[in-house]
Amino acid sequence: MTTASLSQELFDRACRVIPSGVNSPVRAFGSVGGTPPFIASASGALLTDADGREYVDLVGSWGPMILGHANPQVVAAVQEAATRGLSFGAPQAGEVGIAEEVARRIGPVEQLRLVNSGTEATMSALRVARAATGRDVVVKFAGCYHGHVDALLAEAGSGVATFAMPGSAGVTAATARDTVVLPYGDREALTALLAERGGEIAAIITEAAPANMGVVPPPVVEGVGFNRFLAESAHAAGALLISDEVLTGFRASEEGHYGIDGKGWAPDLMTFGKVIGGGLPVGAFGGRADLMGLLAPAGPVYQAGTLSGNPLATAAGLATFAGLDDAAYAQLTSASTALQQLVADALTTAGVPHVIQRAGTLFSVFFREDEVRTYADAKAQDTDAFRRFFHALLEDGIYLPPSAFEAWFVSTAHTPEVIDRIAEALPAAARAAAA
Ligand code: PLP
Image (cartoon, rainbow, N blue to C red):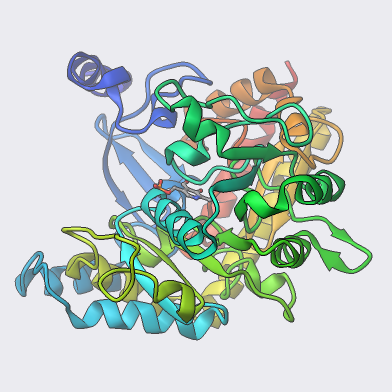
């Protein structure tokens, strides 16, 4: 069989029984075109597809695989846990371990509850915030993704205090009315909104550093970072700040993005996912103990899950945390920095306009000249150049996120040898982008 044939055959079969052939939209390669390789196995920094083709992976399952694929310690922990039972529906020690590990690393987290995805985490945090404040409205920022929660799918409204249109069919108008979308980083817009409608607002939710429109580091104005500004603004209006660290948590730094934001302020609630499950389905939300105390059974906010705190997932998460020591973050930093430099060199040599933005070890590449500060900026890039770059790299065995609006994910398995392999492929891909 030829290279594409098994993946193609699987994709054709998938398209008959799975909508668009995938279980999460970006996997369908919709914005770059072509057939997505079906992955048969993965090890370290490498993926192998159904046809036996090998790729250096820069997706890392969109974040969880921070120690690389099939990390021996993580796999052993999951295997060992599996021999003791797959799910109990009753408390187990691993849940305590994860909550203690998160609380130890992230100061504002006094209590934590585990769920099964980042979406569940933001959905539940929002419910707690609404219960705590007795208010309905949530403020989010255009370009920030918080999972496919109805209330958080709303995209850019046009201007201050514009009620958002539903960002997805199937979201009720009433739900969308309770979501106000502002441009990311726009302090004046937020101040004006709070002056007018502060008493209605339950929470402001933000990605700790937006990474779902590409990476946009929170702007610092006169020494005050955007997240701190949000916390202070929310609190002055009697609202809460939910900092979404599903993507940045334990990746941007050991303490997530919070660790590089400066201390002296705190979000009220935080959400996590990805890294804390080591590749198994996990999310978590946590924060102030008085707020978390509102959860059932002690409090009036109902929230539950058959598989929440699953023993395999907590085993994978704990083994991942065990691997995330100072040496691991040093390795992530050096892989990320080296890759950024190589990409910049290749694109510059080929004359391709680009800007690379970072938040800790997280980074992305925009195919445009100027800094990206907002979703509108992010959308104004040369997505055709990205598409050519993406396919040239894929042909050469480098698997980038199949979208110009995503972070690139390195792992501790991205050793200098692996980075060298990417380096070899970059000049031709940059020339393809320039074409
Ligand atoms: N929040 C952020 C910042 C994310 O990046 C994501 C997913 O990419 C989510 C929430 C949703 O997480 P999940 O896909 O696990 O539902």
